[in-house]
Structure formats: C-alpha cells, structure tokens
Length: 329
Ligand code: KG4
Ligand code: ZN
Image (cartoon, rainbow, N blue to C red; front, side, top):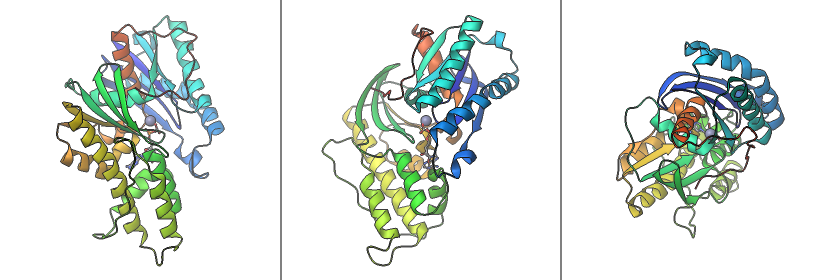
C-alpha cells in the first residue's frame, strides 16, 4: 500500500511516497531556509505563500521519483498540527482536495507523532513497547511514554523554550546563521577541551525541561556582563553540552522509572550528533534514532505515521480542521 505523506507545518514543503509504512519510494523536501534566513527566523505569512507555490511541483517530483502516478496512491496522510496555522492549512487543503478527487482515505497526522514514526522508516525492526520517546524539535521538547501504537502518556515537557528554539536563539546571540542547531554543532566541534560549565536548572517536575535561564546566561557572557567572556566555540560547546545533559538525564531517568524496552529519539534536534552520542552512551536500553535526514521535517515520517493510523481504521472526515496547538499524550 502506497501512502502519500504531506508536511507543511513550518518551513519545509515536503511530500513523500512510502510503501507499507516503511519503505521510502520518494521523499522530496523544498526547504524555505534561504527565504527566512534573512529575517533570522520563520515568517509565517511568507511560509504559507511559499507552500502554495511549492505544492504542485513538489508533488510532481515525489511521484516521479517514486516512479508512480496518482492512480498508484492508496491513501493521503497530512500533518494537521501542531504548527503555523496558515502553513498547516495549505497542506491540509491540498490533501483534502486530492483525497476527494481521487476517492482516497484522508489521514490526519499529529506532527509530533510523525517524528516518532520516522524510526520505523527503511527498517524491518518493530520497536518493542513500552518505549520512551524523547521528541525534540523547534517547537516542542517532550518526554513521552509510548505504550503501544497511538497510545501516549506525556511525562514531561519544556516549561519555556523548546530545545531547537534555544539552539536557534543562542545561535543568533553568537551571530551564527539560521537554523541555529547545525551552526552551533559545527562551531562547538572547533572548541578546545573546555572547563566552561553552564548551569543546569532544577525543576519541580522530574521530567520537565527549561532552557531560558541557559539562554540568559549565554547572553550575559556574550555581552561581557560577567567579565571577559569565553571564545564563541567554547560557549557553543558549553551550551550544547548543557542542553544535551538536560535532555539525556530526563530521558534516562524516565526510561528507568517506567521500565521501557527502548528509547526512541526524534525531532529536528535529534539530528545533533552530541545528543545522539550521549544518549547512546547513557541509555539503559537500546536506542532507536532515525538517520539525521529523517529527524528534521519530512513527508516520509507523515506517511509512515499515516499508514499506522490507517491500520487502526483512523480515517479523517474531509472537513477535518487544522490544530495549530495540538500536542501529544
Ligand atoms: O523538527 P524540525 O525540523 O521542525 C520542527 O518541527 O520544529 O526541527 C527544527 C529544529 C530547529 O530549531 C533546528 O535548529 C534544530 O531542529 N536542529 C538542530 C540540528 N538540526 C536541526 N539542533 C541541534 N543540532 C542539529 N544538528
Ligand atoms: Zn518537526
């Protein structure tokens, strides 16, 4: 069964064809990074307009690369939230029109759940449940217990910035480009062995995160408010280490407390090599993490998740609405 996966929740127009929820036949991503880079972040109105322009060419390319026609598609899956309302609407309306015109089932997909299902792509494995999901992106940072397909319990979340948002903001403070995550990772790799240790916040709830204090600390150091600040590479490395330590310590503790059989790391920040390595080293159970290219937004993860939803008969009505504030668990 071929599922078309459509993703437009933020600044990537992405469409993929995935067979049986796992095998990627095509995965086309039209990134708007250059469009937004000059503003230092995503401009919602520009994103929606750009999605509109890109939809048809991206669909055509996705079909061509998959060597199939619309007649070979069996279902249409689309991200309905969370994300930017206008951007989500473009993808959702496009998906509805396709599903209606071709008489295909429409599947409404939660973007955060789709990030998790990237772990099923191009793999024969069936990750055992319960699994602990650490889902870290530009808009969300969640520790989620996945009891089985479609059953989630959120154990913790960020109380302020998402991890990716913190990377993006600190990159801006350091005068690096957008998106900030890859830029900080590259700069941190050039740091010498650093004695610099940034503070880790204490929170009441054991699996929650906070990154805004860390961001303020970096700001003070950059402005020289605490004497001569450290060089940028050392600062980038210390910031990255503090974020990674926060994320990994919560995930590991939650995995131990809930007796999970697997940790699944997903979302754009899961592309970070320091995070991948630290979690692989400290996880008490096997770690499953998609390759970096499938961690950031793409259509294949939406198709993978949509296929699984379809197995449970979860078909959306054609008047399904977008849900910009959707969460998981
Ligand atoms: O999942 P995603 O592509 O979009 C959202 O759903 O938000 O995540 C984008 C976020 C951005 O904040 C970006 O800076 C971050 O993921 N990111 C990274 C890396 N690659 C992307 N953060 C740290 N290290 C990376 N290598
Ligand atoms: Zn995402």
